[in-house]
Length: 493
Image 1: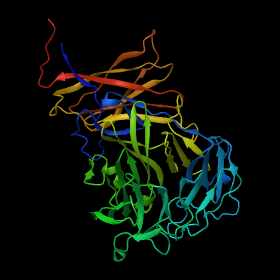
Image 2: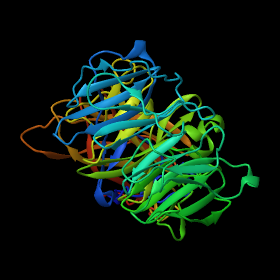
Image 3: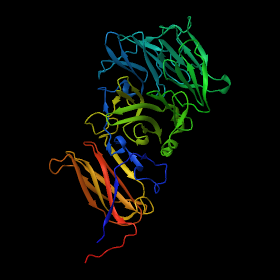
Image 4: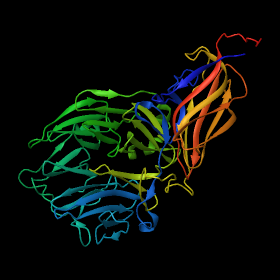
């Protein structure tokens, strides 16, 4: 009889490799995947948890959420604030019911008119609006309505606070300039100690696109195709060219992860720096990045999403007019993706690590909610389809097997649900399928179950996953069994 040679797959740390040839992948690389979380060290994968609506009813007739902010006052009271369409809303203590606090301030509606919020002198301040004609900055003290910030503060595209000053950048009249207030004053951009600087050359016709504070001493300032470092420890804050021909596409397309600044370039690539050398990243997901709609690239939303068993850098992009997430797994150093669950217009990660996502429908969402297996942001029932698809295994590769005839899966048991496996031979994918129940047969927490495969061929591919709105899955390993390459059939005597 034939003796089957096992091909164990216990590491999935290669992640998404759709840009590579499907018949040349390693066992730990996926030809395709969606909505999965890789376990630490790549030792298994699970379906991601779903998102939930935060507010109880849509804000401003379901307009786009254009900004999110958090105000923590000196007396301990705290508020979640948001710009939705042409209105400003507030909620005490992260409550789910919002109050329209717009008052008489002017806010220009539009999905791409995004706002930055910062806390200064026990109030929250917002800068934003159109990329070409920003609104006047606004402020809110924690009660009543928002008011104009006033003073000599510029109407700027973006802003941040550091070293007890407010910095604002890119106005309609000076798109290449950055401005700073006096120490301790958010409204005074004309007094002693305030100032402004042109970044780079006025002749390069580039606008400032983004900024990121690295430390109390240094700031990165990005233009469309160049990067500068500004010394912010003492006025007048000199700036120096850091990288020529490398810049950032937009103000939300940059994320600081523990001192390493990641950003998206005009050629749709992720790069990073600590303020010195430039770091490039693997091309395994270039097919995803190349598919991003060019006209929307500057509105890329980046943020860090972290859980007990994962640490992600998430980039929300638009592909074929649909919001999707391209993810860099910070622990496993590989790419992932999520085609659902991230239909968001803006995102805010607060200092405590919590993430709030502003949708396109007047709702604020929280991701990865415990025991939540559907996405409230998707059409009902928001089913999460999570899967891993391997490459085309062949006898010329490291597996040294042919005629795969059996698969065994080790996975956690659940109260319901089944893991679905599709497979095929010789470049005809998903021609066969089977399911493995997740329900325990006794009291086991982890189970190992198998299925005999039908069909034959020298190349083999499988897809394993779960599509459910009521349960999740966690697969630890898969083992394929096939006839050893070159093995002859031995008849039983």
